[in-house]
Image (cartoon, rainbow, N blue to C red; front, side):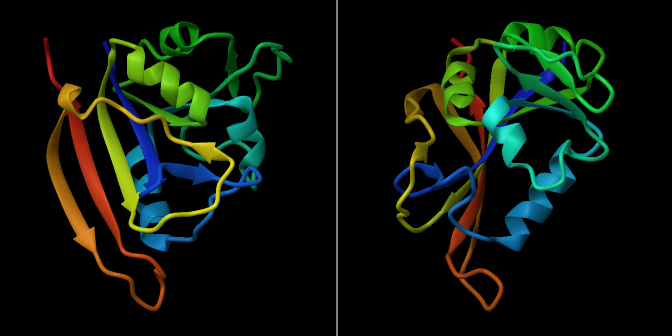
Length: 167
């Protein structure tokens, strides 16, 4: 069974997007995302996929959740449910849920999702898409690395990792 994780950048007010874009630019977060997910499977909703500036993410197995599959399997895979997407990854070491909001909400209740990589952006943003609030008693904070704002990063941020508490 693959390790299944959520990976997201989330503002202090849980904002994750505006007009199908990130409301901030943090090069260190983009680099971390690429380092963590490269060589693995990524699962995303259709709107998240459409927001990618260069199409499918390179060096990753891209799986797009859609209610209307188009059958375009040359560059990415399609699935109609999170369960189907996970089934497409049975030989993958690790699978990352990368968004959007409705997929994150579904993944937080999916019992096989047991890890989260969250970049907390320490600012509040005007947004139209938000990460679902999660029950912090169900997740154990394993580590959190804080970074101050600098010339390349206009906002302070923290790289945090959580593990689901086994019941």
